Image 1 (cartoon, rainbow, N blue to C red):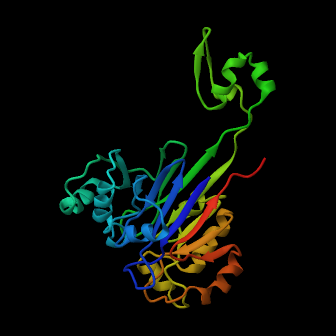
Image 2 (cartoon, rainbow, N blue to C red):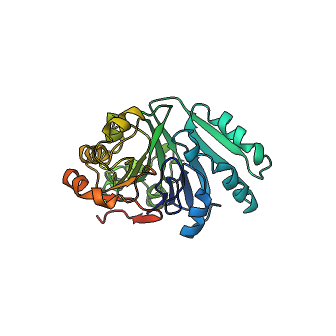
Image 3 (cartoon, rainbow, N blue to C red):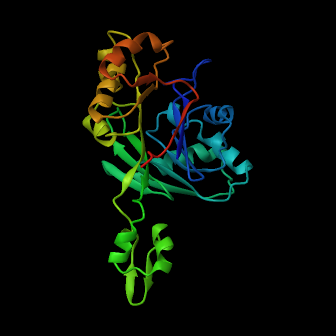
Length: 303
């Protein structure tokens, strides 16, 4: 199971009716936050979720609308008596930027670990899920992220017998444990069938529609993508400032073969996205306008 909440959908500045773009995901008791602009913790509070289980904070890039809410959120984590480390992930310069912001949040009861991204694609294994970061194209270094929950194959009795696995080890192997005993090493793949389809959410803001996005979003259960502009005639502006139109995002979703797409990171000049969705749906019918607080719980397919 993977819980997803689009905390805000605005770009550049918060508005009375729209918070800044941010995503929160919950999986196996752990929470992931992607971007933390001004007011992000207010959006979390409005949703009724807690900041305390946030184990990872990923930053797409270091423009203020994506990171300026961090000091307040760190102080709230400290006030919640968090002791466990918080992992922060982002482009090069992460530690320098975070430490500069921490001038107003210097004393925290938990350590911060930094992972600065340097490759075009990097995978960060977590407990029960993984985060995949991929480079996109903005006017500064910027990354998109996929959150993936992998799913092991079903227990295969015949396979276990064929591999001569002692029955007392079956349950432990099925749970993913590797066992060394009787002069042999027993691994989970010796009792499990083919890997089953897991869950995948891909999130991308502040980018031109480059191939790396559709490649990493391939067959995602949910693709959350920036749509800075919906109005006609904004294509030149999108190219100039390295953003996307609704329609470019829709083409990415179509190419990637995702199940559903939510638009986000709207320009402050865009009052309502709904009037433009008809044309978007002509390109990708499963497109929806993102809204602050829009949520979904993704479940494994029955098989």
